[in-house]
Image (cartoon, rainbow, N blue to C red; front, side, top):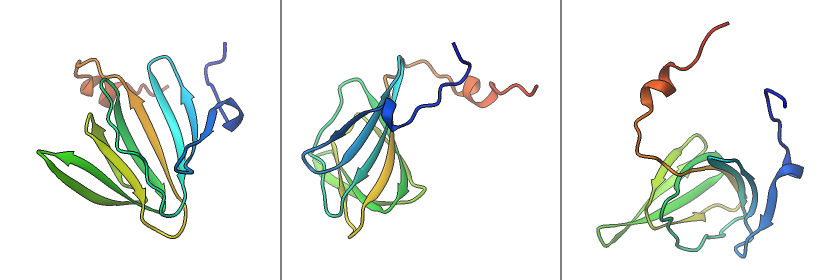
Amino acid sequence: MSEVDILTQIDAISVIKENRTNVDYFIFDEYEVHLNKIPPNAEQEWHRHRKIEEVIVMVSGEICIKWKEDGAVMSEKLMKGSVVRVKKSTHTIKNISNSSAEFIVFRMVPSGEVKREIIKNDKVLV
């Protein structure tokens, strides 16, 4: 078994959603990464997750994320470099531009254990 796994689109579960978003899913034992390309003016359906937490990283383009909070609909424009922790919110994403937008989604099932110190200090120089 190799120390490094290098995956390409051929290794992904690739789908085109009803809203025309192209998604390449890379599913691992404890987390998932998926690459999304959402066409101009396309919008996801409103949804939420019971156990999964999502983190979105904008790669290109502009999208608007909407979420429900205390009975109100909140929204924020996201551009390249934006990182959003969706948590367990009810949310949707819409491409608000005339060109495709790309973003990466990291999905994990949190255990509730705080691992900040491990994450910050785990690198070992060799």
